[in-house]
Length: 344
Image 1 (spheres, one colour):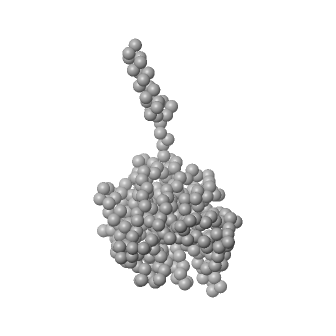
Image 2: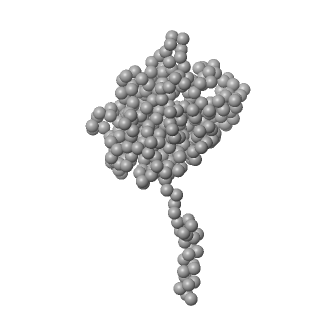
Image 3: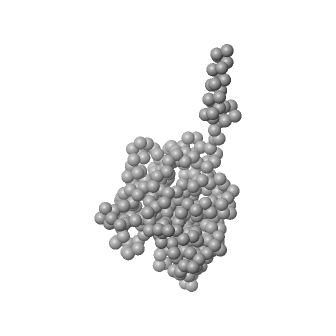
């Protein structure tokens, strides 16, 4: 009799803790093969609501830019189109730069094609004065969130300096494969490239410190740094501080997949008629070599240079089709081009 009672108690306890036969199987992660990681500076994705403590007055219906619900909806539709362009399946991960808050991520993931995928959000507010943050959407059927952290970028000599945090996410893909993702939006070049360089160098130091921590624990870690670095592959912050080198550098532990594009005069952004790579995919050598369960596609990273995302100027030259040019509303996509990385 005692054995029967003890067995009944054990069954009850197991059921409460999710070990009953009905709930014993955890839902397995779906394949990520052939799916993309997409990174995109979405050019001021603001909602139309005034947020206290944030300099968002321009992006209100009665503000300077006359930002209203109709324009917001067009913007969301355009972004989804750009994010999914030429992809047969929705991305497994989407790194987003220049978003106002978690609310706009909620709206974006319920728009168009993206609504067909069960995306979850990784996001934390940054101290940036304009309220600009970095965020991540991930397909929860393929990607299990293990850790999320904001890496603060501060400069002791500039105590009132406020910028975007770097969003760090650790996740798991099918087969138990661990991947470390960084969504970056380094300080702008406002005030001059050389005058503002110290700020991007500090962001690079913060990112590099976290990379070193990860590689110390696992020298073959799969790492992807993405986003808008506001510097090119050959700038000090990227090349010397972050230590992202050419894919041909056998000694590098981080490689910049778009260094060749930059040398060839291609880019993700156009400033005064010159293209340059500001948006990067920088990956660990282990990920590039495919030595730890995840491999890149033969084409590595790709800049989505498509006519629909471009604006042709009077002289025939092209640049990204922006939403705004100064105070003028153009109704385009973004002043940057999205980038894609296909996983295997």
